[in-house]
Length: 338
Image 1 (cartoon, one colour):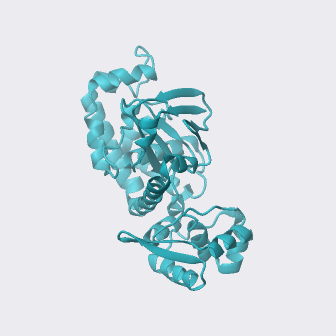
Image 2 (cartoon, rainbow, N blue to C red):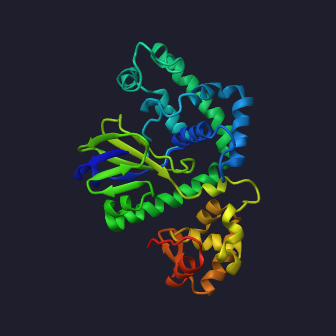
Image 3 (cartoon, rainbow, N blue to C red):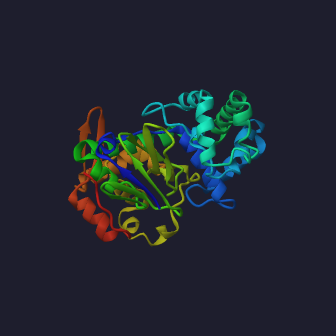
């Protein structure tokens, strides 16, 4: 387990950000730890990504890093420069990594006199190595992730909106207590359930939470930055990566809620255990916005869903009757967020 003790100033500075570059690395780790067939909903995407890596020569720098797994210094996944950076923003930060940062971080992961072959160029020819890597990431992104990014971004925007509202309304304690099933918050210690033992303390820093579509339950923690501790977790919305037709999970054949209201409407009801917009639901579930609107209208008329405006967005969430329907008829009990 990774245990991070957070002092009050660090906890009070909790923020949320998305990161296209962290999505890149997490997607590569997903491929690395699933050398055969990737699990649903990543199966079709993983086949496509492997084909990209095999057939697009410009992705060669990324292919080399696949062998590293997660034993890599944090300078390869820099802290996002803003809450909503573009990949270009993050690659600019990567290309600008100072030599002293690389020199400081590498000994934490590898002996300087016994560096892996893929890592040595970042020491011997830093600028060229960083530029090659950034170019490889761009090629991989364009072919393997770019086609899915608009839907991914919509789902991540929904996640950030939900978490930001929870942070503003109830504070960091409530936010961290409901972050992920493998994240345990017992103030002042944040515990990540991982198969390794590590303890650290964050004093007068900032906690940055990074939701990722490609995480699939894998948690990562970046602590090499002097001012920021970054923790990633699985965001909702991975279903948008499913192959065309959006095949349901293996349990769908016995889904009692789907039998009662229809599969798509059951998906909408379950997704609304956290408030969402029409666009966010469409991206998360892989349904057309017009289809989602039609289901929401029916559920509003039935009195199981309500809507409210937050700024320029219209959020939908479950009425008590809708929550009861999901809890009593659905296969898995859920708890709605306000």
